[in-house]
Image 1 (cartoon, rainbow, N blue to C red):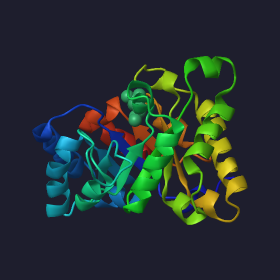
Image 2 (image 1 turned 90 degrees about the vertical axis):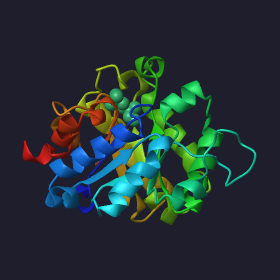
Image 3 (image 1 turned 120 degrees about the vertical axis):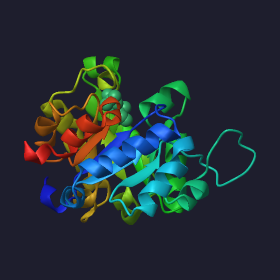
Length: 261
Ligand SMILES: O=C[C@H](O)COP(=O)(O)O
């Protein structure tokens, strides 16, 4: 199932816990300066800074009408209340965030986020007009036991439970094999396409109609300018969620410009 041309490619930089607000401003400026308008119309470029940087990034992007999207790396499932340290969907919406990462494997591992909480966060984001970038992906043990497709499809099913087709079309789904994150070990383009193709197939089965053709599916895990072309060749792969390489403006720009290679 392809129809890839109908979907706008997306390159999203997940800065994780890197860059203070001054460094965030500098990186955003460099990206805007290095990427021509035509490029930014062709490929949607999104930055996902830490919470404390969001106001600075928003001020810069909105103030100068830069063609960059931005969002957060997490949100609370609750809209407000006594949840020390958490940040809510309404707060992110007020800052103009278009996206929020949900269910990243680092949050699943270090903050013990399970499928039920991930599903609540997906609903919270959608309720406040923010598109979730939902992450799924298997660990090395699952991959070695050849259970990766089933594992990822199960994570997907759990996150989409109770959603309408219209809501699902707003979600961006990122397949990030945990063993390929920050390790320099990229899944082969065939590995990435296998799982991402299965995700699109599953959406088609669950939501008959055009939904599966409309949802954008990304790959994440040690993406670099040297492997992005091969990854983007996958018929179901619409972009990438990029960690380490998104912190280097020149390298991130090379990734965004993959079509020029
Ligand atoms: O969200 C991004 C991913 O975890 C990938 O990180 P990485 O590009 O540093 O491997």
